[in-house]
Amino acid sequence: MRAAKLLQYAFRQWKPAAKEVLGHSILLAQFFSLLHLTETYICSPTLVYGPSMLPTLNLTGDVLLVDKLSLLLGKVGPGDVVLVRSPQNPRKCITKRIVGVEGDTVTFLVDPARSDRSHSLVVPKGHVWIQGDNIYASKDSRQLGPIPYGLILGKVFYRVWPPEDFGPLGQ
Amino acid sequence: MGMERLQELAPFVKEALHQTARVANALCFLHVANTYLCSVAKLVGPSMLPSFNHGTFVLTESITSRLGKVGSGDAVIIRSPEDPRKVVTKRVKGVEGDVVSYVLDPSKSDEQKTIVVPKGHVWIEGDNIYESRDSRHFGPVPYALVQSRIFLVVWPPEDFRSIGKTAA
Image (tube, rainbow over all chains, first blue to last red; front, side, top):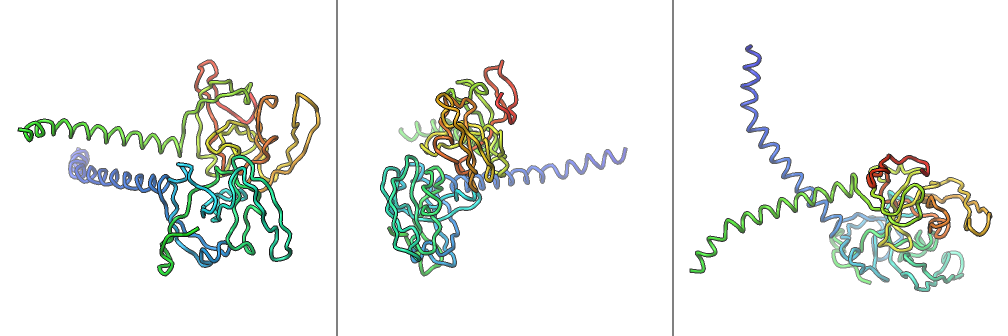
């Protein structure tokens, strides 16, 4: 009898607090949803590292802004530095430059550190040819083959870290 | 005089904005659910007969593909490697490391070819190999192009059933 009354009293005490917590949680969820939508469809920051894009990008890591809107509008083309999902490991993303799109004939050095041999091919429909700026230390379309356009995640257009390299990424 | 009219309209405008915000909220939630959980799709074309007829509505889920657990026998919706704006429905016949044997042109010859599916790729084929453009034509497809897995047929009602790992 007393327990029931105690429970009733506790419920009446906590109800406004619980309501406030719920309200704040919904607000937080809405904020994170908006952040997530912006990151997925408009623009998102990414940390990239590795030697394959020297001297454009640093070895020890740069934070880049990736523009996803131009991908949705179909405005990604040759000369753009793009973030693509690796065809060998679907959990990994790689950063390279688009050298040719479907229909282009690309000529490339197969293994520049060892020989001068070059190879030419036509990029098939629905694919792009990507190469790192540092062709001596880059695993790109020369080894992986042409990459389906559907694997491109976005176009890199700005660098925000390190501070001495802050600025737009050129062609 | 104009200010009075504006003041009259203010509550209506407020109400309209409020309702628009609620609709936008609901649409956002629907979009997130579709992209990350479960969605409806209409299948077209003859390439998955007899499993899926042209005009069948199915439920698809994106959880399995994101966890990397899409395997042999799953019917999946995958972005076409030939046209990035198109999505196609096919069945996964082999994952990375599998040895796949396929008949290139069954209406013309019985010749079989064998291939090992490279790392990070899947081999997809339509259930109707006579009328399907799939990995036999454009090669193994990177796993990251898999969008979602079909698990339930919802329309037409006589076809209502869950989808397993066999062509039926």
